[in-house]
Image (tube, rainbow, N blue to C red; front, side):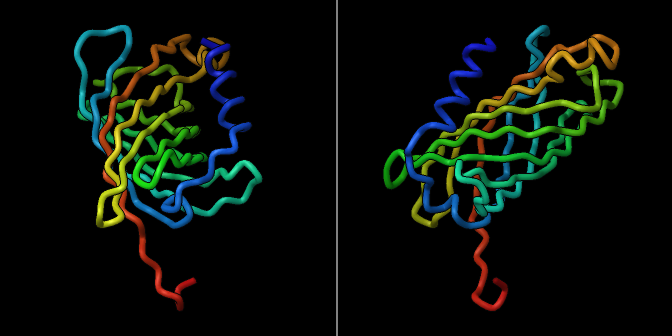
Amino acid sequence: MIKLLISIVAFWLGTSVAMADMAMQPAVSLQTGAYRNRDENGSNASLAVEYRSGESFTSWTLSPIGGVMFTTVEDWFLFVGFMRHFELDQSWQWALSFSPMYYSYSGSGRDLGLALEFRSKIEASYAMPNRARLGIGLSHISNANLSHHFGNGKNPGVEILSLSYTVPIVMNARSR
């Protein structure tokens, strides 16, 4: 698993694929998905709102993101991180993101082991005529085994299969 992650990150940082046009402007993404612990049967729903700044401030074209995610078991996450967009053609793009997260465990959901969790995500999206994007994403959330050193030893991790609707934020010339 570590080798796969290292390979993905190396490809992500080393690729010369251009950033998509929409990634260059701020956007809000609404996401809903199936939230599932890999050690249990069944799943719950998640709902997230994510702000994508569109500003790239590194040579790797990383853009800041931030947001909040809620689950139907009353757990919630607050996150900030980075995203990189890759344009496949005029309509299709994919993105990779990584975000540290604050995790609030409700007591009735899944105990992920620590308040500090990490989310990695891959997303593919299609540009619609109204400039919004419709996408599908796969996320993994875990505490990277830090709970074995600083917590209760739990690191069950969760996967989220999500659908997203991302809308660019139109800014007029005076607000820039």
